[in-house]
Length: 195
Image (cartoon, rainbow, N blue to C red; front, side, top):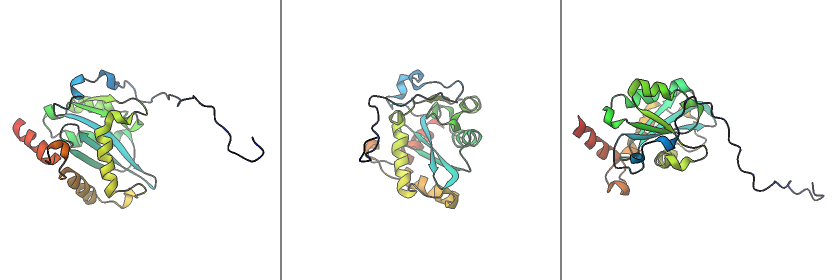
């Protein structure tokens, strides 16, 4: 409101408004077993949805916390039914000991979390709103995906083979935190031991 047309000043000290979640019966991350934080055990996953501003298709990413294995799936749209089907399809073939928990964000595409638990026995927990660090492994991996599919990429033009190639490149990339082994090496070794 100043005469020289400065921007209107905002009141300081006001945080974000907490929105009501539209996810029924969500289980907060505080209820998740403390052993998940230590990364000592396999079978604990983090999930997220990567969107494109240019198209309705999205990417569903699941990252295993200990091995850093990535499962990347293209969905035709950001919807709870499609997300649930993709998560069940990708995790169902693993032994139950390798799909214990999933930590998700608060997007409405995760509203059918109870059906995931019913179908494959994987318990779903939800990070606090605006606390992406509570799913840090998945956020870091999504950053790697963005090297290949930068923001603004039209996912309609990306084929299933290209998605599989990105997943393969990331899963075959040696990591310092894995003693310079790849996520695929680490995860396949534990799958072989449990089979």
